Image (cartoon, rainbow, N blue to C red; front, side):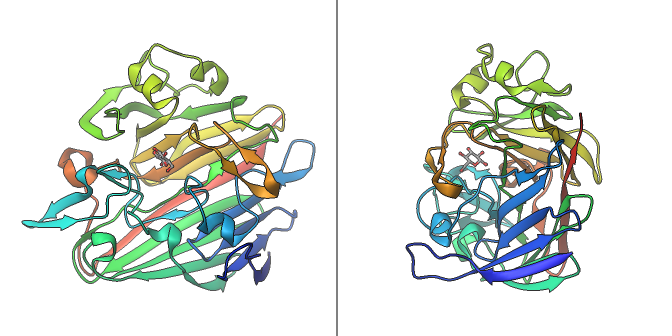
Length: 345
Ligand code: BGC
């Protein structure tokens, strides 16, 4: 594994950060930036033996700092997904968060981990990014020491290990918001997607959970067998799907422990992405709201990329039946996700 560190091109901004690239023996690579612990680039082989880009990204740091880019490639913290009413209660104390999505908190608040500078240390084929979030940052209790290790190997597996420890009981739900596109089309509609889940977390028009988990049977959310996204997107038989203009939903995953939970593939390039995680849920977001400039000045429009954000279920702070996102003081939060790339055909 070759590790290359260089300044991230700044663009029209007076800030600096580093770009760290891990390159395996086949020439495939993953690039990370310590601003927001972003995944900037993933370049892997296709079925013709050509190496190419498979995630959305920006050329410059300014690209990540300025404007709404849909959390492209960012590490999300302290709390991925939505918290209704931008507040939660713990042990009789109400914690008020920053509302950044109407009256609700999305992806950690106004200045979540996606906007924080991480320190980093290089390992064998890996880089560990670290950020110490002060007590009550964005309203969350406890000083939270977070480490995110990104590893890449010769099998083109990108592994993300999250660890965190807090000096007070707190709530945490870390994830990564990388958007995949396994080819060169401007959208992901020719991709096939499989998610091993029998239920989804029902949401209202503001994408806030209702507290119910509903079966996927007979809906466009049923991805237990691989489905062509173009066909799924054309469906008009589900009000929640239509209101969201596609996938923006938390899946309740089958099984427990580290396991394969989803697969994305594209016939044209023969690329296959398998997702493994130990988490109970994954937010599938089909990028319907995209309207921004991306890598190489290309316009990213609706469905430019697909995010598979492994996590605890949205708004778990308000629904004990969804599980628990509570981290006790002194305990170690630990979770892992693998994005494994291969080719077929
Ligand atoms: C959310 C979407 C949101 C997107 C970009 C996703 O995780 O589920 O509702 O538009 O992130 O912010």
